[in-house]
Structures are given as C-alpha cells and as structure tokens.
Length: 211
Ligand SMILES: NC(=O)c1ccc[n+]([C@@H]2O[C@H](COP(=O)([O-])OP(=O)(O)OC[C@H]3O[C@@H](n4cnc5c(N)ncnc54)[C@H](OP(=O)(O)O)[C@@H]3O)[C@@H](O)[C@H]2O)c1
Image (cartoon, rainbow, N blue to C red):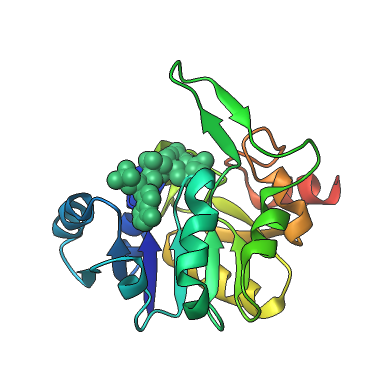
C-alpha cells in the first residue's frame, strides 16, 4: 500500500525507513527536495520523491505529517481538499524550540495537540495521533525488536482510523496499543506519561488502565 510522508526531517526520515523496511510504498515530500531525494536513494526501493506536498498525496491512502507543530496548520490548509477519505497520521508535539534549544509548549495546559489538529482537518479525514511517542533514535532502535516487538501507543476517535494506523504501526515493526480517543493524545506527547516508553504488553495495559 502507498503512504505519503510530508516532512523528511528527524522523525519523518526514520518513519520512512521503518515503513519501507516493512514493505510500504512511499511518496516523500519536503521543502528541501534534496533531503527527500537523499533519503529515497538511501532506502533504495518503492519510494517516489514527489514534486510537492500535493503531489505526495496522489494515489496514497494515508499521509504522515511529520512536521513541526508551527507549520502543521499551514500545510493542512494547502492539502485539505485531498485529505477527505484518507488516514492522516500526526506525530507532532506542540512545542517550539528557542535558539538555546529550550522547549516550550505552544498550547494551554490540558489542551492536547490531537484535539487542536482534529479541528484543522476537513470532514472525512481520519486522524490518528501516532509515531511521535518515541524520540527518533529510540524509534529506530526499538523497531523490529525480537522475539517480542516493542509497543507503540496511538490515539484515534474512529475504528477505521484505528485499523489503518495499526497496520502502519505493524509495518514499521511495532505492536500497536490504543491509548484512547484523540482527547487522550496529551498522554503521548513530550511530558505525557506514555511518551518515550518502551514497555511490554502487561505494563502497557496497566498504564492505560491507570488513566
Ligand atoms: N525528531 C524526533 O525525535 C521526534 C520524535 C517524536 C516526535 N517528533 C515531532 O515531530 C515533529 C517533527 O519533528 P522533526 O524533529 O522531524 O523536525 P524537523 O527535523 O525540523 O523536520 C521537519 C521537516 O519538515 C519539513 N517541512 C517544513 N515545512 C514543510 C512543508 N510545507 N512541506 C513539506 N515539508 C516541510 C522540514 O523541511 P526544511 O527543514 O527544509 O524546512 C523538515 O524536513 C515535531 O512536532 C516533533 O515534536 C519529533
């Protein structure tokens, strides 16, 4: 199946490598097409470098918006008419980074990025907050672990989005675990209790049950 990845930076490039290693066909787009071309050459198969963000969505059933939170709404607005009937996967954390590398949260306490992003999407788009729960290094090292795959938490509001994102998570080499509806996505973000965790099934179930 074909998935578009818009943004081939720190997390987008790792997501692309993991999905490609599981056999997903990819269409990549980035502001700097050179970085997408370098990534495609490294992956080596079943990857198309799209001309732009809109081109990336041609023929794709799902799109991963691997973008900083500050540019997310602008990109969604530009591709909104193409998102109806697609799975939209968002790994973004609502953070900004200053020149000294200090992080600050862009949303008020208690408001999750998932709730905000859901409000930016057109009717018919199916949102999954996923693939942003681990740092890029951890995501790469924990993928395709054996004998037991590492778990990856996600949040969705509808069952079809859940099935679709579970397929992508398994393709990337993880076992999916639903944390809850989109309103639970704050738990997946930097600072949330499910962020940057590599745990087994029993611990995952107890963590989710503890909410
Ligand atoms: N990196 C991690 O370890 C990690 C882990 C989990 C979650 N996240 C979250 O994922 C999001 C992205 O983080 P990141 O570290 O991957 O950031 P990043 O390294 O800055 O990558 C973002 C990418 O998006 C591209 N981009 C910007 N505007 C675009 C547009 N209009 N169309 C297409 N591509 C565009 C950028 O290209 P240019 O640089 O050329 O502008 C860059 O390649 C953040 O919200 C972060 O919190 C990151």
